[in-house]
Amino acid sequence: MQNCIFCKISNGDIPSEKIYEDKNFISFLDIQPVSHGHILIIPKKHTIWMQEVDDETISEIFKLSKKLMLGIKKGLNCDYVQLSVSGTDIPHFHIHLIPRYFNDGLSEWPTKTYEEGQSSETAKKITQVL
Image (cartoon, rainbow, N blue to C red):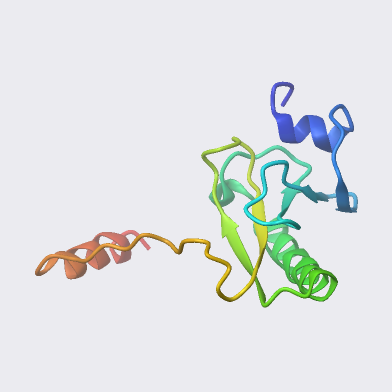
């Protein structure tokens, strides 16, 4: 896709600090990291949403995620690596790998509570379409 910043990075039109590349994927440092060493993994084939990606690509990108997580953990001596899949910031499916340290002060996900009966209704809405 010609206006997609990630496709431009993948094509070499925009420079990046590349961490890994093969014929299907590229990984590079996030330019606005949550912590130093925060990397992104993208499939080279442009797809906006994870659920639109074929099963083989999903399997391979998560195997690659594990490999890169191990590299981040060993290379940066962090306590763990947080994986996040989000799609609203750049409309190209991507995975964030974020080096984390215990007591790093980074906030966790905000949480909510269900009202009486709301959890059952929510579960029912999802399971009915599976």
